[in-house]
Amino acid sequence: MILVERQLGSRPYWEEFLINFILSPNTQDKLIKEAIDHFNLTLKEFAKEANIPEGTLYKISSVKAFDIRVSTLENIVTTLKKLEIRPHETPAVGIITARYALQEIEPIISIGDRSFMVAEYPAATIEEEIIQGIRAENDGCVALICGPIAANTLNRVVRIPVIGLHFSRDQLQKALVEAIAKISE
Image (cartoon, rainbow, N blue to C red; front, side):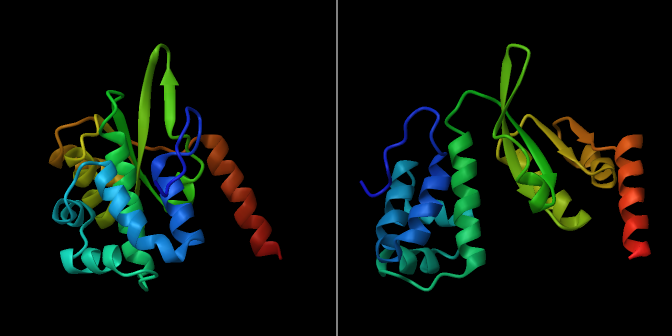
C-alpha cells in the first residue's frame, strides 16, 4: 500500500492522498488506482463522481508522473473528501463559502451528544453557491449553511434545511475599522 496507514486521530484519507500525490510524482498512477479501490469504485464510477472525463482519469492512473491540471487534482481531492464522508453514519452538514473561509472550519463538530461531519463546498459566486447546494444535497448532506442571498434561492430548490449566514454587529464593526484603516493608508 502506498498511502500511509491511517490511525485514529491522524489525517483524513484525502489529505494523505494529496500529500503523497504531490511528494511522490512517480507513484501518482498507483495512488489514483489505490484511491479508487479504497472506495470500491470502478474507474468509470470515480470519473463520473469527480466530473472528470474517463479518458483523463485513465491516463492519470496509467502513466507515471502524468502532467495533471490543478483543476483536475482539485476535483479528485474534493471527490475523495465526499466519499470519505459517506461511509460514516455521522450526518454531514454542507458549508458553502469562499475557499479561504473553509480552511478555518473543523472537519467534525459536536453539539451536545451529537457529532456532525462538515462537508466543504467552495464557491466564489452566488451561482456557484446554488450549484454547490444542489451538489451537497445529492451528496447526502442533512443541512446547508451558505450566504443569505443564495440561501433564499436554495430554500426553494433543495429539500434539506438551509441556513443563511448573517453578520453580527461585532463583525461589521471590525470590517468597518479595517476598511477605514485601508483608506487612511
